[in-house]
Length: 94
Image (cartoon, rainbow, N blue to C red; front, side, top):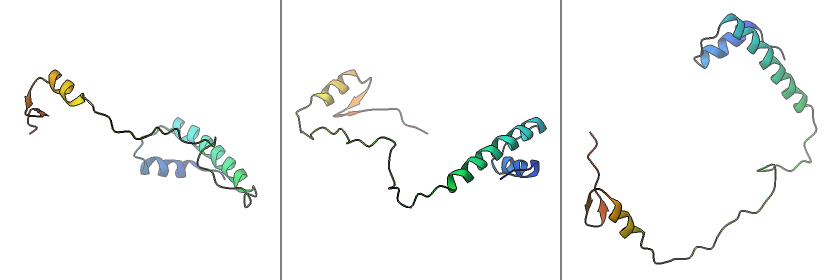
């Protein structure tokens, strides 16, 4: 498939891009090559190919969810410039 200059200008307008005539010519060629490659891919028989989530199949590395006693709140409050009871006090946004 080949894109002409008017089609590229229309795409650029939809994307709110201001292109020069040189850029329109360059992108017309580039986009036409990309669409040609996609047409080649569409010719492949993929009916027996299983869909995949990622290029490399792997198991997710998950750690056990273990509850631990954390002193995080106290250390955060110790470094806070302002605090109110057990929370960090921040300036009001207007």
